[in-house]
Length: 490
Image (cartoon, rainbow, N blue to C red; front, side, top):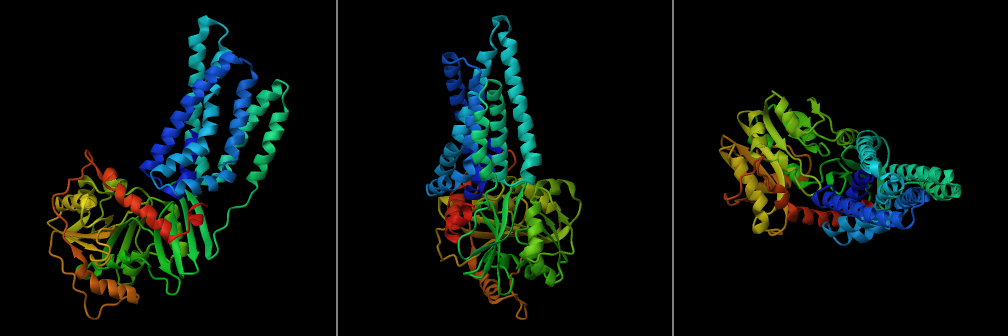
């Protein structure tokens, strides 16, 4: 179980932490253990020697300890096969061998412990009880203690060394101490190896392994942009020359200050680099922020200039929506990351909770990646239907001209309110740069009219995970174009 949890850390930065990655890791874990159980049973019957468990543990540790050295090449090959096949291939090659070897230990232990047939049930039950209890402890220890405190490579090597030590001590008791020294030396060397550097033209500013994945701040010196990376997604970007947002949809969201010019406070659900709250603060709006990842909050403040006079809540948005009694003039809902928007934040119940935090007649702005036409527009229509169940008026805009790549994915900005919405931009309006001026001066012509026949999204029936697969796959390809593969493979 520790290996499975760490598998997310190793594969996630390349493929994201989505349905395909979880399915791949579960499939590889279960199939590898099944293969190990069978092979262990065969070996135990043919060679019932006490050296077998120690040998299996030691070799498994060596196999696992080599992953920091081998993972780059494996992931590079797997990444080229796409976001569906890639996670399965990488999980199979990286974790399959060590999991198969670990799977052999239980049946071997059962065979060696079975000396009295009358006590077979108790001994088999005891072995599997200890094994399962160890898995529970290992999972909790890895998720709650080790992952937040250590880098993935160090954890892999640490677990590998633990396996080698356990196997080596077992073999030492049987007169085979050389295994421990021989296997530990290369692992210790790997443990001392430095981090892999970024390609030329990219500088690493900061990085952290948060409870939710790898977070990095990277300067792209060739394009003059600072990028905010979370796993296999860029969640924020700013131009180095003037520190303004490099994403058009952020400027489009600024339209809330024109639609509701008398607004005083904003709730931002999902922080990113903090570009929008920072800009709105210059126009006198105070923003509260809900963000689940503490590393995102920390880096937004230290590397992207984010600051707010409001409150920052580091928790899941649904938990916040259930507990708070505060109300706001504007709510901005922007939680898209890794190719999808968390579906539990877009159900009818979640949107109704958002509506309850809005003062009468004011505004919700929601960013959602989707398509404007065709069968792939199904999730966008579902979001529209769900918003209309809570608000009388909903309008949808693309973050680019609808005539540009009309069949491709884009950021769709939904504005919802019970009152009418006027998107006219005042002639004396202030803009932080020319890109912002262009977006806010043009977006009124970027409105799209989605069919209103979408499926209602509810907590009981939430199809967004399935519906967002085309967006997830296009986002994966877009990230490959945005940054070289060697950046993602660190």
